[in-house]
Image 1 (cartoon, rainbow, N blue to C red):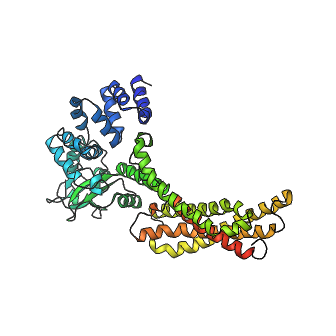
Image 2: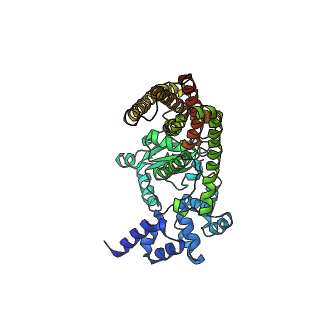
Image 3: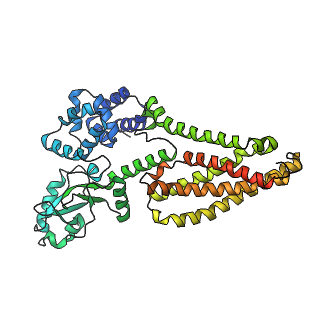
Length: 437
């Protein structure tokens, strides 16, 4: 492998772990062609950090290398006070395009689109269209899969692929070979909904239109892959009880990391304090039968784990469009059966464990079987309850207009901990009344 390629590959692999100074030093070692390719491979955040770290005389070169949508992404990543300075580095035409893109929210289709795309008029002949596109393609930095047919007011009339043009007779008009049923998206559509459109229709590129059906730009599948990755990362972080980090783990400043994690952790801690309150309500029962305290961690952790499983599965199913709000009753029925089955499995394990320990070590006294039944029945109830709570909470949040991913696994586990104690000691009071209690 040539040394310069090896250096570029090494630099890309090491990039997340390098300091800003080390990144600049490594980047400036690259040959010009390799540096261009390397720069295009970087994400918007890394590009922005690199551009700001470069000498001011070099920034214009790298900003002008970017397509308008990529330049807009970079500008959105820099501090507000730096944005105008980067805009002035662009040529007039690109600057106007970038400002138009910056008017859209970052998570809207309009904020993702590339304003440079191939277009044709319906009255052009196929031969004229091919000649035009051959010249036009040289100016396109991104792959072009489809060509969009528009009228004089830029309203979208149809779409034609390069293949359709190549196989069609040269004297045919574009109107005769184009497809009029075009799948498009509004410029204000949320990026998550846009990604679902791509997946549903298996598209490589999609036109973005305004309210009057005028085409404003295109979004390619490459852009959507990044969106899907960002949305999945955000959901996973929320499920884990962490605010969105908005950057690679190793690059997030420590104080920001603490702030992002402290809010949920403090809320969960306050929630867990209710567990201590609940145990205080059953202080007399614990004093009479100390053996009950031995199984508290077992009971509440089992319920929390089952609830975390259910909520994680439901949140992901909702994100993929597999489950909708109208499916709530089907989900509850499913979780009733699933939770009962899981509860019986854990109850059987718990029952065998207590009986075995009693046989081997005589650990639980004369009323060991009643204790075993208490634990088994409690496990069944708590796991069933955890599964139901874990599946219902995402529906409640979605119905209230919140992100279901906010129903984090730690939050569900905390909720089930408190209610699990109530179930456990209620069962104990019924089963052990007249013996240990």
